[in-house]
Structure formats: structure tokens, C-alpha cells
Amino acid sequence: MTRVVPVPAHLDHLSVDQLAAALGPWPPEERILVDAHATEWSSPAGFVALLTLAQALAEAGAPTPELTLPAIDNVASYWAKVGVIRHAERLFQMHGRIPRRKVEETSDILLPVTIIRNATDVMDVVGGLTEHATQILTHQLELESSVVGGFGQSLSEACQNIVEHAGTAGWVAVHVYVYQRRLGGRKVAVIAVSDAGIGFRRSLEATQGKRYGERWGDAQAIETALIHGASRFRDPGRGQGLSGIKRYLARWDGKISIRSGTARVAIVPPWDDEPPRMEGLPFFPGSQVTIVIPGKEPSA
Amino acid sequence: MSAVIRLDAVLHEAVATPYCDLVTRPAGAAVRNRVLAVLRDTADDAAQLDFSAVGLMDYSCADEVVAKLLVAMLDGVAPRLILRGVRDHHADAINHALARYDLVVVALLVDLPRPSLLGSPPDDWRDAFDALVSLGRAAAGSVADALAWPLPRTTAALEGLARGRCVVAYPDSTFALGAVA
Image 1 (cartoon, helix red, strand yellow):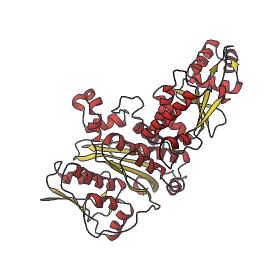
Image 2 (cartoon, chains in turn brown, purple):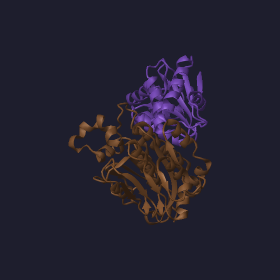
Image 3 (cartoon, helix red, strand yellow):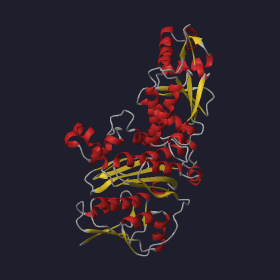
Image 4 (spheres, one colour):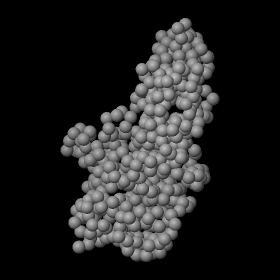
């Protein structure tokens, strides 16, 4: 038997919930067909979530999932350009015409979908953020050099969370968009990181779980890490990554949203309306972190 | 005398990377261990950690390289540590890391002509430090006059700075910035 999991027409960090809902009980007993034929657009969070799903299925011992690529040629071509197809080919049995377009950086792709397995990968991602990416952040988003520095620090810390806590590989991608409705046409840089690891609840359970008793769960675990800076390590210097990101985003009106297991917790700036805490969501494996850094507000 | 330790050079000795960014905990720990080995061998009474050619430094590396290094040097055997060539985003990460340990360090920031304190020192420490930057080597009484503070308050701040190894206390009851000046 095969279970068809339709990918939403617009796949982003919120509509991943629809993908999760279609999975059914985890781990699925049937073979999974991820059907993206009707997908028209995906955010970097959507791309890395798809790869996470396939990796989690492999780690759960499930049959190799299938992936039907978007039917619209230029959408599938874009998937190749952002680098998701080169990774998907290792994880999925692919259906549809596979575009052989080169992965490239453009004015909207600061970092193509990139695998994070260890600290060396993190160093390569941060060090490899090219002059091109810095130029986009400086000129298109009009971020000052100190803000660009904080962007790199946030990217590094988000990727390190995979290495430190997930216990398996993950992916990162960074794109630039125009937020028309929410920010009146301002550009934003979006960092999306996802892994198929043990998730926040299991990572923190041994050190934090007893403190919260029956309230302990996915949402509490994310809040404990994100809001209270808790870490599974007893070293007082640990837990700096998320708290540093949070401080940076507070200063520049940015947003962070973390989904893990059945919950999503976000620190929401005034320009956005995402609920700050969602529980009881359909289960999705691992952890997904989305960071949004707005460009400079145009002067009146 | 003050030894200068170029962190970009130490990074390349410690980690096989073509980049000059101080990122990730393993890289930071490797750099710290190399720096500690150098500091324990030096006869100098102060050492300057040079960030001039360091690209990015993340929060984890600020903890591993700077905060944990200062913790390891609290025994007072190693030389005083001063940071130089520090840019805004380095300072931000270092401030964040040091605050967790209530540590303070003297730094020369690229964009500031005067030495600064990084970390979260008490306000009195900051004011006394700034006064000493202006005055040069001075007794507590002179600093108290400059700040219009009572002498005990000034002495407490200067002695705190000396305990934190941010200034040097001399046997003649004067205080100075030492190698930074």
C-alpha cells in the first residue's frame, strides 16, 4: 500500500502542518508518496522539511519514499536551482521529469539547500557565505555591517543546533523575499533549518522534564530552550545559541519560529500574526527553525 | 611586556579550515586550548588577543574562546588578557557570553579610540575605568576627584577592576590600565 501525501500549493513553515497531517500515525506503515505535482511555490522552510521527512522515514526503517515533482516546468526548474533536487535524489524515488539545472546563487538565493552533518559543515556554510550574499544583505536589504554580522551568527547557531542536539543530519537554506502584505514590500532574509533528529522534547527531557511535570511536552520544551535559554548541558555557557539569536532578532524586529514534534513556538514581531504557541499539531519528525530578518524600513 | 596572539593564525593551526571565522564549539575549544598553552608559556605579564583578521565570531565561539579562557585564567597565574581589533559583532557576541559568567574584559574596539570594558560590569566599574583611561596611572583619590565620588566608593570600584584583571593595582596604591595604555 502507498499513502499519498499531497504537498500544499504554497509550502512554507506553516503549511508543513498540512503535510504532517497527511502522514497519519508515525512512523507510517505504508510507503509514502510525497505528491508535489500541484505545488506552485515553496519557501526554504518547505524545501528543508521535505528532505527531513525523507530522512526521518529512512531512519525509521520505512520504505524509500517517492516524490512527484511539480508539474509546472519552471517550478521544478526552480527546485533544481535551489539545490533541493540534488539532495532529494538520494532520499526519494523520484517521479516526473527531473530538471538538470545547475544549483546557483541568485539575487534571491543566498544559500542553496545545504546538508549539515558536523561542525565542519557549519564552518563551510558560514565561511562560504559569499561576497555575493553579503552584497545582497548590505545593498538590497540595506542592512548595516553589524546587522550582517548578526545574521551570520544566527545562521551559525541555528546550524549548530543540528550538530549539537539532533543526533543526525539536517539541512539549511537561506533565501530573500519581498514581504508585500506583512511588511509593505520590504525585503526579508529567511533562514530555514530542519533536521530529522530527536527533537527539543527528547533533547531536553533529562535535564528539564522533571521541573515541568505533566506540563512537559513539545511546546514546553521549545519554550524552555527559546525563551529561558535552557540547554541539555549543565555548562553555564551552553544555551547561548538560541538566546543570542533571540536577542539579535529582538533588536532588528526579526522573527523566529520553531516547530518540533507536535508544537510550534514563535517570537512574533508586531508586523506578523503567527500564533506564538501552537500545541496539538500533527506530528512532524525532528525540529524546524525559521528565522526572518527584515531589511531596512524605507525612509519616508 | 605584552604578547600578541593573532586569533586567525591560531585558528588555522588548530582547525583545518580555509576561512577566518570563529564558529562552532569544537573550533572554539581547539583555539582556546592553543591560546592557553601559549599563555602558560609566556613570561609576559599581559597578552593581547588580536581579532583584527577574524571574520565572524558566533555566540558559541565567544563562549569557548573568550569566556572559558577568562575562567581558566582566573587563577591569576596566566597573564592579563586584553582583546584588540574587536569589531561590533565580535563585541556583541563577547558581551553576551561574558554576561553568563559575570566576567569583564578590556578590549580595544576597531571603531573606538579608547579602551572599553566588555561584559556586564557594575556601572561604577565602567565609570572608574573611563576615568582611569582619561587620567592615566592615578591614585584612588585622583579618580574620586575626577568623578566627584566619595573615596570608599571609588576604591571599591578600582579594586573590583583590579580583581577582575581589568586594571593593574600597584604597590604605591595607584591604578593603571597597564599594557593597554
